[in-house]
Image (cartoon, rainbow, N blue to C red; front, side, top):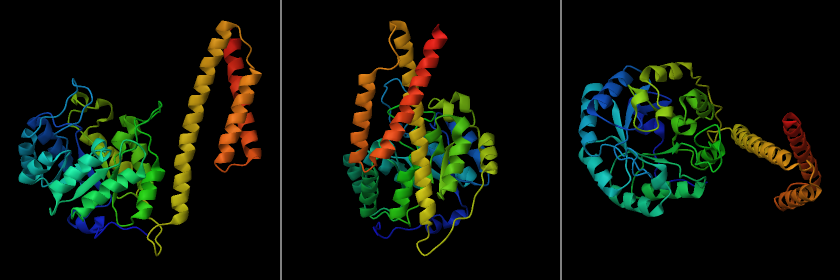
Length: 364
């Protein structure tokens, strides 16, 4: 089994926190000293919260988007530590960021998805961290590439960082879904399966994209035996300049945390339950399959609208034969049986015809 070198388990490098799961919180963006301090003071009243996260430098693709307050925020974080005794945590994306954080005694660094996706940036950060004794957490890359994620972890670990953790925040969706990011829990599970000592933190705020889903995603993460949660919270959530939809107040965070159920995990010689891991992978894949199936039927409905306007027949035999042939050939190349594929494609086609028939009849 692969191992990252001298990896320190979370129960050792977070020993002083005396908390499981580890709860990390703070606003999506640090906008003013008043906002930062008020948020930290309110989070301090929640016993489970041990780490205060702060986005100082925010990567943005749109030049008009809020990109953080920069270096001034580091002075605010020193005040947070003084008043609340919370550990501070900051995202870094360049050697300069690392230098500034170390100079201002930031306790934990995290590397964002955009940076994880770029091996050149990871190499620069690894060089800046060489020989340093500071915990580093690394988010998954934007796309579901476990090898890219592992590569970033290995690069930072090779620089001598033994206090290392992964952050699962989901992956950028190429299609519209009910969540901001596709969870693809099976990738986080596979990473944890390969590296048993690697702490896994979940960011349900980024997966959800909307505060209505944060409770559900948080519970799912705990059910998958993740070691902690990073949940965004702002003392004035509606005024947040970045990702307002997923911001919650500290009081809302407290309610969510109090409603979470922390279940016992089954222990064995390998410290994880293989059957449970496989089932969790199936649950994640099934959820994605159903979402994609629903999207397919939405397109089918639009096709029904078009056929109705053009006065076309519902059944287009040549098209159905092509779909069946292509689907069968692809499935067989992936190891699925022809009998199963035939039944599956017929069921999908039957439902597609029913949907188009309903759409076209309702037009009349």
